[in-house]
Length: 635
Image 1: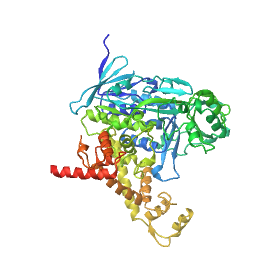
Image 2: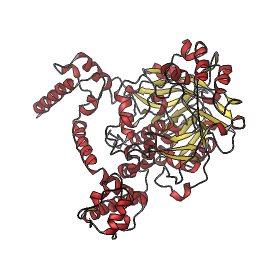
Image 3: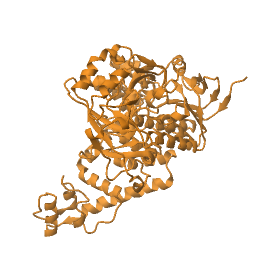
Image 4: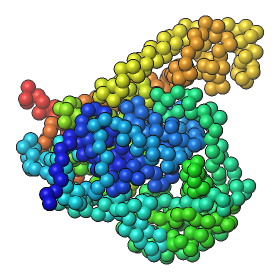
């Protein structure tokens, strides 16, 4: 019987958070798209903590939304608790985090995929990529299709690999090893061989997850209740804030103690992590409880969050206590925690090992340098986290579509978006562990706040074709209102009247000796735009998000101006392009290490070259001088 053969514009391999965004972006741009998954029930599954957002990750979700992605919309529909983190700090590090109903999140995303035109869902394992020699690049290849384990061939013009943690996956709980993907789902065991045959360098990484426990076996009276925000802020700029004011579910806080740590230390020889059974490198910023106890030996306790997995389940997630220790040890250590003395485990904690790529093999477009038409996103690129995965899937999907449409690719730089920082870090730095986004990685974080993601990126989403004209025009109107109000506030003078003095006194602010500008008062740490409303008699009625931008701009104007100047300098180096297939051997005085690194990474600009590990400022100076001489010679 002949094998099935079908034709599509784009093939997406994997239906996790990266795969969903990649497939939706391609289909919404009018390309016939097929998404493959080892199980249709695993679409947008949350095998680890069922939450979206968090410190710096909330920024990514807002940026995904501003570009026309789905994650923010989906969590707004399915969250059960929401919190704005870091509210006591400045706006640059405010980050939204929402606990999701795990089953509903997956179901809602699957529904979205099913209702999207030009998108086909297929449960099958992709085992090979099919390429032909590329006539446009010397020695390169061009993707023309994929093959499944059954022998079916799907011809395509581009493909996006979003395999997550499924490639040659194995799960470890003490001495017990199962050759499955997360949550006991089937692993994808064949694609790695095909990728290696095509010259793609693979890494072996690991991650882990804690146990899920039965809510009925917990004593919450011994834990601290953690409630959501009184006023919920939505993730998506399209969500009506009134639609997310729901009755929220509580999370709970408990702690490990010396007894817990004693049990863990006594059983380290039974942990695959410490017994040498695990080959893969784990995430430094999300360590297992074994790692925490060993590396932070002086700490007497660690925070543990007990978080619900959903409304219609008794399963609770034991946040902060991922482990690969054996089942009997898990019971013993979990039962030392206050409120968990009689805990019943529903699903054991486990570590998972999987294949992923060295992301240095990718351009900033997330296309493979050696294989034209093959793109890559998510944990397969050596990152960790749902949000990091989703934003890469979105960018990879957009660029797969634009390559077919013969349009300029979308490349966000470090001054434009957290997404730009993340992708730039992946493709220019040496990553020997799963990459996690953090606010400290973003040099221009005062400009790249989560509250202004729509102002920064909606225009790009509109130009790409994922944002409607109506939504784009709303953002343009918001910009106009912000600018207009900042100008008005700058002209408002406040006198030293009794009413003014009383208001200032009520907020512990120094009284006025003489009149001053409203702008100066807003800049006082204890005051803000809203607190001064009573003495600002001509103030127009503005939406909250407009007033928020006015307040931030006025309060941080000096810092914002300084950071914008830094961005200008950064942009100058980004604009200095390095010719394609540039021969670094021709550059005299370039150090050997720098020459080797530059050949490997093939940076597209001087700015990108300057961020490569092993390339020094002196090397950049040499390269700049040489490129100027070359330009002069060519006249």
